[in-house]
Image (cartoon, rainbow, N blue to C red):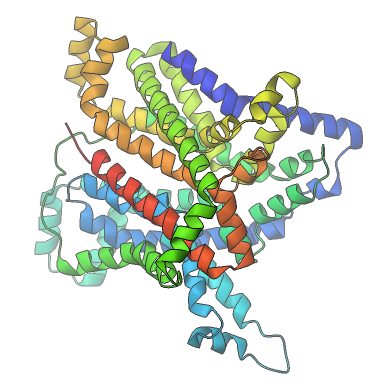
Amino acid sequence: MPAACLVLAVAASVGFPACGAAARVVHGFRSTGWPAAAAVDWSLMLRSLLAAGAVAALATLLAIPVAWTIRGWPARWAGMAALPMLLPSYLAYAALNLLRAPGTPLGDWLLQGPLDQPNLRPVIAARTFAVLGLALWAWPLPLLVMLPRLRRIDRGVMESLRLEPLGPARRSAFLLRMTAGPVGTALALTTLVMLGSAVPFHLAQLDTYAVRLWRTLNESAPGTEWIAWTAAWPLAVLAVATAVTAAWVLPRRPVDSAQEPAEARGAAWPGVAAAGAVWSLSVLLPLFMFARNIGSVRTMATFWRSQSGAIEGSVETSAILLVAGTGIAVATALSLEGGGWARRVCLACIGLWLVAGLMPGVLVGSATATAWNRFDWTYRLADTPAIVVVTHLSRYGFLAALLGWWMHRTDPLDERELRLLDGADHGVAWFRAAALPQLPVLVGGCLAVAVLGFHEIEASVFVQPPGYGRFSQVLLELLHYERRSDLAAAVVTVTGAGLVAAVVAGLLTGRRR
């Protein structure tokens, strides 16, 4: 039964849109052949890889000192450290942009370019801020990839390394060789995630492959969206390869379920200061930059009153997503508990969700909107806010499923065997014995999924039904039209809500039974 529920959820959020997109592509080829617009621009793909790789490299560099600092701390600090990634990806970039606004020293310098040739300073600044802003958003991803490996390093190894007469360079090289696998994985995974990011690069007018696909979709006549889907096949190949690798690695990946890491000791103050600086640049600096541009408390009150419908709509969607994510996590843990075919089906569902999660959000939203608006019996759903929930599940369902996998893998084996002997391996008995002790982790992780759905933009703009307000749509419009006081009020609202929810999620996720 849990595996069947997962199959239904994956079929509605991933399978049906994917099959609809494939059918459209086949029909398009039969009707018009291979159009020139569907060809892959390999030079643009290379530039996109370079931009994504730059973001990944910078994000990994930011994550390394944080990972080494908190590796011996309780697990809740990992949840707190991951808070920046629960905020909008464009937040840090938009805040950095305020540093080059007209009238600021940097803004005035950027405008004072050479008179005898084009002034490239604003363009270079915008693209630099885009890379830096995305790195400030993405560094928790390599942190979470590297942290489990760092926490398993035995305390004796570190003590022996401290006693060896090695200089800082040789000691750093040794530590880098010891963690080369997690660092490489973090770089590759972050690069793949950045390849699908469109909004910050779009705002910085940096033409990447995801931005080009978004533009093609916006310029496509009805029924020709398949051209953009066809041009995205390199990204689809990378996403499928990553999902297949994850489905093969997850059953074999060790998970440390101990109460404390191998070396539970206080970190040095330089490391704490570096970690605090990275976190503050990602969260506190954007909040401060926008708060000082609000003007007055009356501006906040006026904004909330004028956008109350959009805020309420996003809150309702996030609440539904919280419930749905909890169900997915529980169904995943139960399916893995059963083993056999249920386990294989569960891993396949995780893989399909990973493919959708790694694809550009604009493609996911476009495929979902096209599929669910195609038939009369599905159009009723597409004309309601439920289609937004389905789209968010296609993008973030893998997070809930991975949470269920984590709950299963950290569940002690002896307790699982006792539950099997007592017949508490399914239903209410399983929930009381296995899920209830991990309820803080379950609620905290799914609350993070709901927070991501609150401000998601890229897919929502394609599926949002007419007359249904969404706070993400309001943010996107404000980012384009540069209404600074309203934009500041919107960012402070979403950051404040995200901070509260993410702090609760981090504290709950870090609790252990």
